[in-house]
Image (tube, rainbow, N blue to C red; front, top):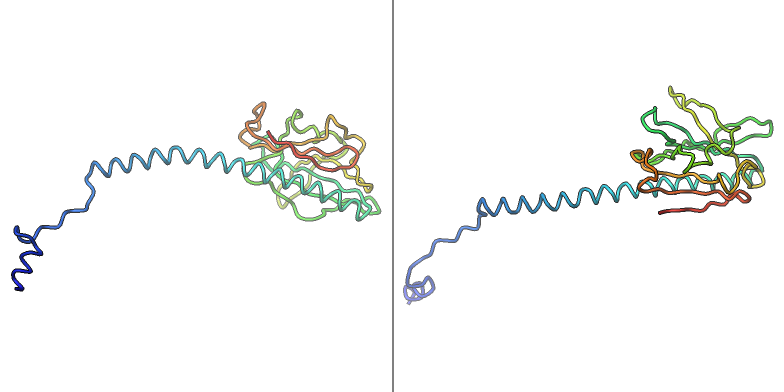
Length: 208
């Protein structure tokens, strides 16, 4: 009985050799080719998404700091300078950081909070067509030291009343964050513009 059962289970041809499950060389080459095609599509898409995210975060940082400047000016009843700082070392044309400065009762300015840097690869455009606010108030410009580096800056003032300096109007009240690599493009491929109301200093956002 046992031998008959064994013979029936294995079949009349006896035991069979197990089939090989390995891939052939051709199959492996096809898989590698497919992976390569998918990567060539995915990498540029990921790069574009990452760049757009950097512009958004940079624009949000800029807008948030202007909002904070207005809040501090009205709360402390003191003028606040929003300084946009060129820390590009001449590699790009633009500004990559910002910092708020407080004017005390005697008129002396001192930093209010830490230096805020834009995400890597993004800058505030120095092109007058996209950032006229940089040169709207010519009284706020100069240079300041950060460690061993001396960096130039431009900026604008939020007065104790909450309104910006009188030099700001509807024609020069905005600044724009772009990718550093697009700083010379007109227009840039992507951007994030922040406008400051010339009466209230309230912020509005513009995206393409």
